[in-house]
Length: 562
Image 1 (cartoon, rainbow, N blue to C red):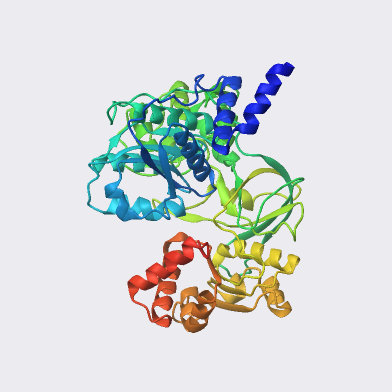
Image 2: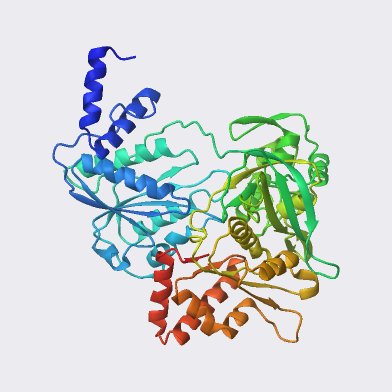
């Protein structure tokens, strides 16, 4: 506790400080208390050599945006004006004029940029311009549980350099707990900006040891597991309900689960390599038994070409570039001994979490979370194989305990209760819209709802058919259009149904309705977007460029989400 005289000084200081000064003091005190940063959080610059910078951010969950705002406030304390703008709002023609640019961007999916950063990302990769004036630095946010950690940030940094830009501070990659590394990176940036000349030589970023707490992990109980496909279907689509005390999510969020490797495969690998399953191995700075490593920790299914090449380098085998399961590699190119195998597994990737769009709604399914998972099939060397996580989920037993986390998706949110929405969700894309409609039904939202759903066959693949029909009968759904591609001699998809109702689709969106797409990215979402552009162009009597601009405005207003 502070002495009375010190307390008075402290309170006087707080009462006279503005918002930016309070933000600076908060960061300063936090760094001093936890010894996470140098004593000075930001260097004091008497006469900054740079008076203005631009900070662009690409975000899916809002973290990049928050950091951009905090850094802008810190720059202001050093008398540097910072313009903050999202990559989706950034005027791309300004890029060639920029002198000092900071980019904060996250990585999602299979190493992909956030939706909000896609236009900016494509622009720097697809246009043959030069950025000779540009001085830049990149802060990359990611999650080391994914193999392509911070890939988007790495590629933005590399592309700026290829276009002639000069780094003022090296790329900084951040894990889930990112505040310390992010602040260290911005401190380096400010030091570079305060130098008499820029750019400065590349400086190795300050190494800060962060305590990684990660996402909140829930443990739930499997209540229901039902295959929604009927006899004769080519698919196996599981509706799974999990009860978990205190689980919190919003419609549009995803559930993340880390699957386990098949016991049969793990035991066969142990037999082939003659390793001791009880032997302790250090993996990611954690000691774990060989069995647990193979069963729960590392990815042994469908290894990337990079990992197959790494296997070849360790074993000395001449293996052509390919993707292959670890078990198949061991059968065709056996290891020399158990020690060589230990070297191989120590360099492998952790099992990546798989994300499934939540199919339930907080207002309708309190204390529960539902997902929809189709059994994924693919072929390697003419052999049919199945996805690791979809197979794992399909084999879950009732009352089994299952760990999971919630992945927020702030860019896929329903509009206000009174606003209308059009939802296009073929196949398992219906999951998000079951969530949306369940929530609107439970809360009595007044906005109109129009659903486009499609799959292969009406008789065997109409997912949630009874619920959809009930929502239509009770008025929760205003309109429903379905397309079953294999029930006639020609292929019929959801985009064809959209064209049949083109005038009404345009009337809805032109009156303020939101438009949502959920499902496979390629080719479905691309085809649906192209069809929507065609409808806007024809029904709105617009040129192709005007239709594109119209859709971009919808996206900026949060009325077009994928």
